[in-house]
Amino acid sequence: MKRNILRTLADIANPYYWIMAARNKAFDAGIIKSRCFDIPTICVGNISVGGTGKTPHIEYIVRLLKEKYQIAVLSRGYGRKSKGYIKADKSSTMEQLGDEPFQIKEKFKDIDVAVCEKRVNGIEQLTADNRNLQAILLDDAYQHRHVKAGLNILLIDSNRTLCNDNVLPFGRLREGVAGIKRADIVIFTKCKDITCEQKAGHRCYIKRKKDIPVYFSTVRYGKPYPLFDEAIQDITINKESRILLVTGIAKPQHLKAEMEGRGAKVELMQYGDHHNFSDTEIDDIAERFLKSGSTMIVTTEKDATRIKHRKELPQVIRNNIYAIPIVVEILDGEDKLFNKNIYDYVTENSRNS
Image: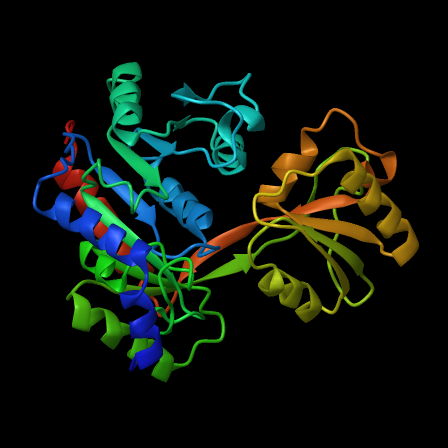
């Protein structure tokens, strides 16, 4: 993979590129301090904006560890209407936590979930609240270098090569590709149709930066489940289905293709990532559903958290809306090796091992 000379020149002329490079150099040299903790900390993040599948990968690791270890998830809480440290409990709302931490707490009620802009403070509070914690997962903290994570997992969208991208605002990168060198594991995500040649190219690109494990993942979409009791409880998507697909995620095309692959006719209502639906938009969805002749409304689990807990919803939505779950799969039979990487790190560094 060779980089276009124009892209290199764009980064050279980009002040933000140099600001991020100087910041990283300051952390590397110890001029800006990073805090280490005596509890295993696993950072899952990326160096590009947009969806690389952080939440499903966080959930994969939660499922992997939660039966054996006491774990917590710490997030910034993007889009929340609160500030400071908040630990989720039964009374917590999506507005307090943000949609993704709220979704994680809804799915995994037996683990600690907290939000805090300053991850150092968040870890201090979590470990003070629960002295028995054995690992903390840091959601989207790859650029939050005030915490020196013990294991950095970098996610890269396999459909968007880093060498042909640029740092913001000329591209979608949060920092230069030199940031790959901080990773301990790289996972190329969204690899549904990836070829062996493409995998080899991606692996070679990373290995030239740093000799670390490289994995490839995809997501498997499950069976839709109703958000409300009024809807039919057991439903299957097939060629008889006419779906109104409502999404507030960065890249809904994969989900749309999945529904179409099951034989359904799909009409997409696409909103921006982390979108909070207004009353007018909810009414628009209800009207579009009725006019389109759709048989069901399908949305993502992330969007479902924003819709399900609204105080008022048109009955037509309550009767017909479903969420579709997604589960990460590590490809090529390498899931056991990846799992071992995670287990070994937590076991060897746990305070209670």
